[in-house]
Structures are given as C-alpha cells and as structure tokens.
Image (cartoon, rainbow over all chains, first blue to last red; front, side, top):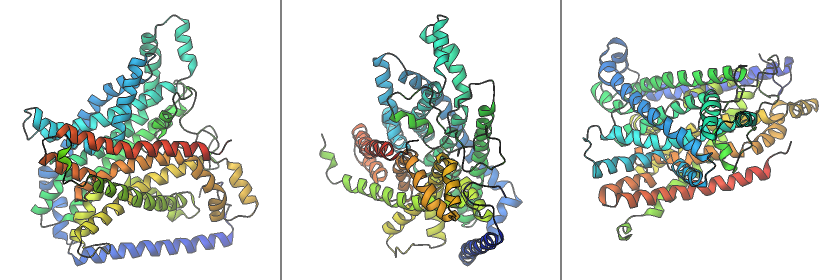
Length: 329
Length: 222
C-alpha cells in the first residue's frame, strides 16, 4: 500500500483494526447490495428476459441507443463548436484595455453563468416557436444547443481568461519590447501558449456539455440518449432498471474516456518543458476562482503545487499530486 | 405590466428551490466529507469505494440520476422515502436524495484538493503527537482543509442551486417547473424569462459574494 503522511506505517494492531474496518464496511456494502438484489428480484427486474435484448440482439442498439447517443453527441458537438469562438471572444474581451469592451463582456459572462442551463433552454425553445419558423421536429435540438452555447460560452470565456492570465508577465513584456501591438501580442504570443494551458479545462467542459444535453431529453422532448429509456422500456417489457443501467454505462464510458484524456493531458502539460508549465486546473472552481478578484495576479497558478498530502511518499517531488479533475455542474 | 403574475405562486416556487438547495447542500456536505475521508484513509477497500463512487457519479448526468430516482426507485422499486402516498413529498425527497448523492462527488473532490493545501508538516506533527488517523483528520487536517476550500465549495453550492432546476424533470414544483407552466399559459415570454433569470441571480450572486468574503476571512495565512 502507498505510504501517506496522514497515517503511520501500520503495525500489527493497526493492521488488525484495518481488517476489522474492511469487514464492517464490506458487511454494510453487502447489506445494500442484498437489499437492492431482493427488491429488484421482487419486482422481476432481474429476469433475464428484461436484460436479454441488450445482449442477444442489435435491435435496441440500432433502434434506440445509437440514434440517441448520436443526438447527444451532435448537440454537444454543435454547442462546443459555437461556444468555443464565442468564449474566446468574451474571454479576451474581459481582458481588454477598453472599458467599453471589458464591462459589457464581463456583465454578459457573469449573467449567463448565474442562470441555470435549463432556464436558458426552456426560454430558447419557447422563443424559437414564437418568433421563428424552425420546424417543430428540430426545434428541441436548436433550443438545447442555444442553451448550452449561452452557458458554456461564458464558462469557456472564464477558462480563456484564466489561461491567458496564467502566462508569465514576461511574455507580454517581451512582446511589447520587440514592438508588437496589442492585437499581435494576443494573436502571436499569448493565445498560442495559453491554448495548451487551457486544453485540459476545455476537455472537462466537454463532459459538462455532454451531461447537460440530457436536460433536453428530460424536458424538451429532444430524442437523445436519456429520452430513449421510455420507448425502450415500453417496448421490452418495463425493463426500466436494465435500460437505465445500460444508458448510465454508455454515459460513463464516453465521459470517463474524456475525463481520463483531460487528466492525461494536464499531467503531460505540467511535465512538459516546452510550454510555460502553466495549466488552468480543472479542479472545482479553478477557472472561476480568479473571477472573484478584480484582476488576478498574472503569476498566480490556479492549482496548488506545494508538498502534497495525498502524494505517495515515493513519488518524485516535482510531480504534484494530480488535482481532482472535475468541472462543477 | 405584471398583472399576469396574479395566480402564480412565484415566491413559493423559489422557496422550494431554496429548500431543495439547503437540504441537498447539507446532505452532500456530510456524505462528501465521509467520501473524502474514505479516499485518503488507510483502508484500501474504502479508498477503492470512494474512488469508484466519485468516478461513476460525476460521469453520469444529474438528469439521468434524478429521472432514475423517479422512474426506477419510486415507480419500479416503490421506494417512497417515508413520503406515504403524497407524490409531492415523495418527488421532493427523491430530488433531494439525488442532488445530494450527485453533489457529494464534487464536494469530495473539492475537499481532497483542500487536504492537499495543508502543509505536510501539520500531519507529521499530529502523528508525532501520537494521534490516530481519524484524530489527525478530525482535529488537524480537516479544520484547515475546510478553511481553504470555502471558495471551491461556494462554487459547488452555486452549481447546486442551479442544478435544483433539474428536479422539474420529475415534477417538483420549483422555479423552472413554474416557469415552464407560465410560458405555456401566458404570452409574456421575455418578461417571464427575465423574472426567473433575475430570481436565480438573486440566489447565486449573494451566495458567491458572501462566501467569497467568508473564504478570505477564514483562509489560513501561510
């Protein structure tokens, strides 16, 4: 087992005690699992008939799950595609020297960050049906994408801002020293470098976007992955539990791949000698923490790099304990 | 201009939002702290459980969890959480349970990063005094960790406040649910949206400002 600074190396008594804790915890877990098993069995949710369609035929996958997942991915993709440039625009806008640009961008970003995505989606849906003639079968997709874009563009704006601010002041100074103008400094010096710093946070934000598409399925009749549960369980004999298990696994697989990619990227960028080593952490609030201060110190690293409590003792000191990779939603 | 508001319980709906937020915040704080304790503790099984829990829960959409609590837990398994036959009470409790279980994963991760900011010397000194793991955690590490994570926790709380709207998916009569009703019944789309947006800003902005101030107050100066 890895040594931790939080507890001593274990002697015989501590080991015995740990075995006891393990047994007690195992018993508690077993009790929960047993309760689940009994109550599922009572309602015949564990009958093979209810699970069998997913394993013996392609039909549920072809008819419900794959089209649903495709819609989920489609909405997330469009949302990201539109939100990224918008986010970059407002993120840079917030750093502008001109009050007339800085203040409105700040207000817009803070406004859309403070409102639930669902409210934005419902409003967009109603607005599209009232003011435009978008066909009603694609309207939910438009509404979901609009809601996601408005919210995530403002979050991405904060990520972009934090990414640019995470670069050492020397970069700007050097650009100024060789006579670059503000736009040039941003385009040739700051943005290219900060993109690498922002990548992990952006990838984590994709997970948030993906998860939020499910709102469209639950409230706006957008035919995505979650919405496929109802027709599926109606078709295969009320196998609600089986359906939910399968779609949860699909979500976990997709999102876990993205989250792992984000951590790998972050660890790699932190180690890398080529970049400045600055990384916008994906820890909760790492990107938004800076927004509470009027102008965060440019040198401030968003995640603590000090000696770590959780780092295994053998781990090299220059490798900070990977901070938790989560984006808050 | 605001005549159409008659007959709608706007404050009542936001009060449900506040209640959802407060109950699930308390629940997730408790469960999240326990999870964080498990994840840094000496028992391998608990560490594994904590890690698995966090990785599973934060990769499932909250909407899926909440809809499952209604379709799966309540309608299929008949879990009523002591709500009797009152659908409103049952749905409310299911929503609180789902929100708390979901948010706990984020609280756990925030706390774990907070534990990381406490200098190693603190834990070493505590152990040198002969404190056990639970004592080290309870008396030395967590009090300092909590003080350094007020800001991340505030962000989690704000996200939670906004996430309570998802409870509309299972018919809890909170703000987003009322808003959907009103938009369908009244021809005042922009105004209605503005009112609800304003309501949420009134909830989230002061929380952020207040806890931002608190975090500066209680931060451990090192």
